[in-house]
Amino acid sequence: MKANPQQIGRVVVSTQGHDRGRRCLVVGIVDERYVLIADGDTRKLDHPKKKQLKHLRAEPGLAADALDAVHKRAQTIDSDIRKALEAMTPEPPLGRKQADRSTDKEENAFVQE
View (cartoon, rainbow, N blue to C red):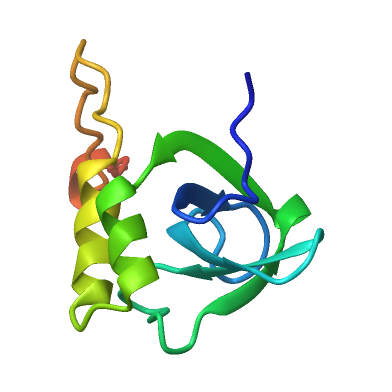
């Protein structure tokens, strides 16, 4: 089942715009096409970004603690949003560590004599 991005407290990822790839929290609903998002860092709750739903990808996580703080309009809401997003960050898969690629020019240079 797909997650609904039009739900307050839903964790979403921006797929378009200058904030592409950034994880945010839905803090308001404007209409059937737009929501208000904030990440607590570059976008505070005082000035949320209006974003189209088609430019967002919803994640299955719902930040319940931050959702309660949004409804109460608590003083430290931005820090609550940051903590919720950090706690819901998916862990990288365990497995083989990628080899370090050296980009040192001297090491990779072809020497002619």
